[in-house]
Length: 83
Image (cartoon, rainbow, N blue to C red; front, side):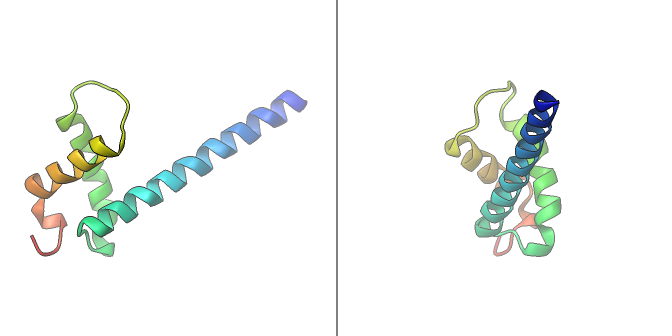
């Protein structure tokens, strides 16, 4: 019973962290110039762009995240204001 409860807590913590990471990506895109109403579309584009920019899976540091956002600014300028 305790192990099951721990597994449920671990799953809850992972889901919570995933939501926080998604929020942080939203903030990064907003400060990169994406209007609030376009954030969901930009997140979808970001996920697709990750595969276009990086052909293989690997660690994503802040430098790779910046590369993906820069790629999006060039390939999908309509997502950004002042572009």
